[in-house]
Length: 402
Ligand code: HSE
Image 1 (spheres, rainbow, N blue to C red):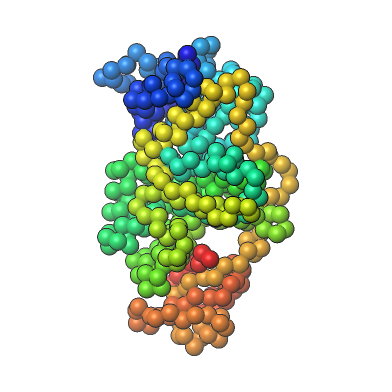
Image 2: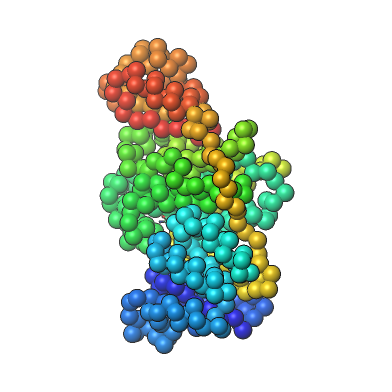
């Protein structure tokens, strides 16, 4: 029998508890032994909980209990999750987590501590909620050189954009709905400013290319400046606007990555990822494009991935499951200008001036008086900035996903 603990009894933590209870027999069959919950760590009181005896406020109870072999860290945030995880791994316990902030920030160090102690540090739930993506990228696509990853990695922003597109809802109303449904982070800035998606594309890039991609070097924009007018122009161009975490291995061997709203034509599968769902398009040199789709947030979907990692940790008790990357001193990330995109722009300037500055730009049918909307040819970020500075009154500038 494997004894387990949960750290953090919030949305995901209570989902982990529910799955362990609901699917106990299934878990036992998959792990090869029963998984029994011995502790739940939370600073709050849960006096009405049917198993209130499991609750503790002291992490030492778990760290010092030699019987506990696997711990689900679902507290979120960097501290004290980082300190607790280090102590648990050092005490010879496997830790599984949904905490993308922690994995993106301290993943290399925690993976190393896990290795030194011959235990597992697993993080399937940190990207894409319930969607299997970490293990498939690491194992099932192992025969490929991954060339590109592009994903809708944040359910909250996808939900907000979807509500704006289909139900004409205001940004604020849609955000409140997302929070009420438990999709949003405690601090919604992490979602709407793109930081959550940035952590996730950093994790996927590190995993795909084997070296730590520092999330702080990824250019990150959110959706706060996207308006209903932008969304309507996209619809008129047979496209949608989605927040995309994008990473590509360039010919120079470096990783180009960004998080930004992008205009996506309807012939791309990512355009159909609606509501709170996530979708991740992975391109391998042998397999071509592979799409991963499903619930990227929420209680049971995220807990499903956490519990799968608990099972895998129990299976790999004696022999570590190798999932991770190394931290190197080399400069892994490409410069912003190493990659070109087309841009969708709106300006208060004339079509004539747009043509004179942007040459072969495609002028779109205008949806408002006194403005010109257009799609540029492929440009670097600097070229796009320089040229738009030559126009008066640029309202919008969004990369096109090709
Ligand atoms: N706030 C995140 C999202 C939760 O909306 O996708 C899952 O990571």
